[in-house]
Length: 235
Image (cartoon, rainbow, N blue to C red):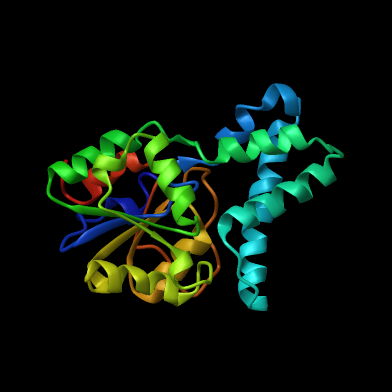
């Protein structure tokens, strides 16, 4: 959180590339359900939260089972579970929610922060569970493509985060040593995986959640991406 030891240290230096998780970090996954809240009713937020939870659980379980499929399919499977849980057998609503997931809202600060990073000469990339088609659609819809140098999908290695081979994609594709990568995610488990791999990690703790009790922790913690340029010594 702002003001904690993780945010009061000197700026992070010697960064070669800023790499962002997509969902929950750049893009507001809850915006899909929010756009359909009239159809979903007053419990739309609970619906959205369960959709997200099952989506993540299925990525972890499929990785452990060795039964990979792309994130679009997983997102649909998770949505089907939630529709069943809420007793909503509505194909039209399902189709609408899935379409909305392709065009999620970016968090308000995202365009300005990316623009500032690029203006200062930093390379930027996305590393996501999302399929290439999902990422292309999200970046285009949010109108941030001019400030993103590369979008890397787990589909290249056919396993989901936090498997080390996913983070290795950044090293291999962007030709940057792990200790020169500044990795941002709103997901504590993703930050733990990336930090264990060797990235210099900044946890975007939008919800004020407690630290995960996992083997590796972030170097810094901030509330929104607005704080990132100053943390990198660019403000």
